[in-house]
Image (cartoon, rainbow, N blue to C red; front, side, top):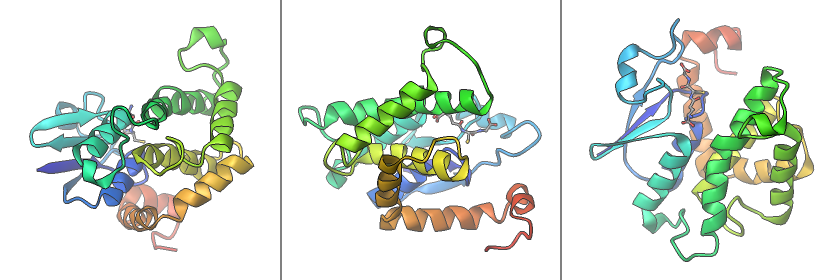
Length: 216
Ligand SMILES: N[C@@H](CCC(=O)N[C@@H](CS)C(=O)NCC(=O)O)C(=O)O
């Protein structure tokens, strides 16, 4: 049995999209992360920082997006979304999954909060280095892991789409736009976006932001 702990319009979107790409059955548990103190206290038993996503697969709890993404792609190998050990794409598959959480996301959070720092002071390094690295990679590779779509793209793709188009934190560059367009054209991405939006507009937190509370 697979349970997916999710909140709409959040960092758990990439896993939501991956589940659609995998085409597997699961039960979704919607977590309200918009309370005065974030998610309810009992959610800490699932995710120690009370953050989504998390999954429970046959009693095993997995947290952190990179771990969940790699775990799911490997648990359902028939979908071909995880390059196996020995596959030349595996190095990039692992690197880019982890890079999203350990460099891309914290660098952009630091930028959003105007943190001024030296490269050597934080493990995630500098904004310009991150942006140039992602750009170089996407100029040379059609997908995160190289030449084919893998689960690393649901992670990198959702991260780029969200931070470039919604947050306006990642600068618009041709390589990012081309990649984002390729990702957004996927059927599973579009279906998941619609489902996620449908969930978000039911929440008072987002109704305030959308203004009317109605779907556009
Ligand atoms: N390191 C976690 C971060 C997940 C995360 O930041 N989730 C946010 C959603 S955007 C969250 O649940 N925030 C709720 C809160 O902090 O109360 C991961 O990569 O899985």
